Amino acid sequence: MKPREFDVADLYRGPVSGAGELDPVDTRLDEKLRQAYFWIVNKAIISPHYDIEYNDGPPQRYTVGDSKRVLTLPSGQSYSSYVLLPLLTFATRRKCLFVGGPGRGKTASAILMGVLAGASVREVRRAMQHGHPQMTIADLLGNPLPSDLINAKDMTEIRIAWRSWLSMRVKIVDEYNRIPTRTQSALLTVMGDNYAEVLNQVFECPESAWFLTANDEQGGGTYQVIEALRDRIDVIVQALAFNPRFLEELLVRIEEEVRPEELVPPELIFTADEIDAMGKEIRAVEIPEGVRRRIEFFASQFELAETAGGQFEYMTKDTARLSGLAWHELAAADNGRDRMKDLGCQTVNGLSVRNLMTLLLFAKALAYFRGNVQVELEDVRQVLPFVLHDKLQPDSDAQFFALPEHAHYRSDRVSWLRHLFDLANDEYLRLDLDRTDAVGELAKQFALGLDGVGERDTRARLARIEKLIGELVRGRKLYGHLYDDLLKLKYLHQRYTNYLAWLRAQ
Image (cartoon, rainbow, N blue to C red; front, side):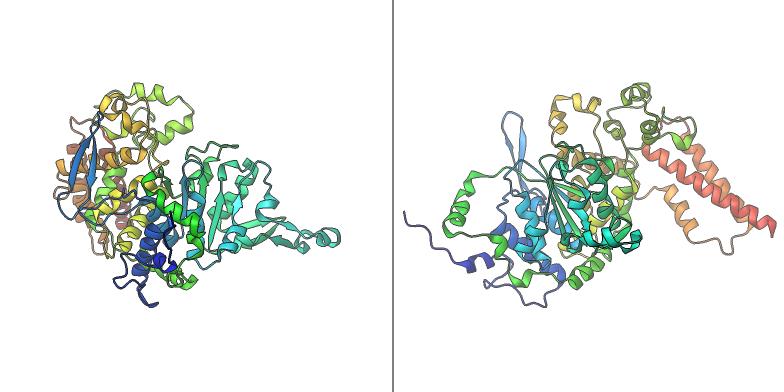
């Protein structure tokens, strides 16, 4: 059979261009980002998995198989996480981990991100760091010049031949879980603080997007990944299985020797100034109060561990972790709440400040990508599982996972996290917190400032806080969101108490 004729121009065509060509160079940055997405998903990365679903109306749903799983046909523009999340990482200059079996295209996807930043394929490949068991700090960062080692009178005279990859705007580390522990610590400094240090010599790195690859996200490999390094990773994206129905695409690439990374349209290349400007535009996207409150309520579910501390502030899972006690012993003692209703009983940890900041930024980035000036609740819902993929750890012994209908959540972390968010939103609606948030009203009142607030008014506010605490704790079980509300009220009470003392001293 004669091979199908291939035209390189086909790689430039897609749904972003009605006439078959890309828009002019002066395209808005968010539109340019969308063009990059559609070019990659249609012409470069074969990823038919549209798992970030949006709906403009009721979607079509079909129940499939003995497990009664649901196949959803979204009614709105939906996206492939395997392409979109790395692109958002590129736009925000954060850190993305690709996970999946060998040969799934993880490295190829990372190379595309480097090309979008203006480097040639050859430069990206040469700058890529390949993890291996003998990798030293010198291999990773650079070597001192031999002549300086001989002639230098002190350490400051020793020059370092720094590795070229340190200056790249996109940094790629392939199989990072094969790097020795000591070298991982040096990598952590570069990732976390943007500088490299050898023999007291420092190289300042530019703000970069990072792409790492591994065969799994649990850190398994030649070396266990140190916790601090794993914590620096912002999103985790799984390379899903190849669908053989798209084998023809692979056949064309073989027959015509096509390498998509070498055919990225020049119009899609981002300059350093454009990346900087795009980052500012993303940060300017607004998160409405209602969406922010849903995130607050969700995050409040997980940190409380009532039996972990004697003082109220120390009743947290982090206190339990630092104590070194077995988690299952503490969990067994905490039997006063409905363990099926309490979402916090499904996890062994809570969320850090870094986790929440990353979630807010990627929600902004997704809204920006979609051309919106405000974050929608669905943006948070779609991006949350990839941000918290290995940050919110499930308690495999929890009653929730013992139910047959929940068994799949043990292995499908993305679906579990999205389900958690849905459950939190259902509880938020049940409590009618958009309309009845007494704690929020007191916080807004305090945020207006204390100028002109007299002693009498201050005492009245203190009394109101004390009354509200009494109402909240009367005959109620302690759940995570109530715990955080009480701590917020204690904070407000202390601020007013300090202010009252100041008034008396005047």
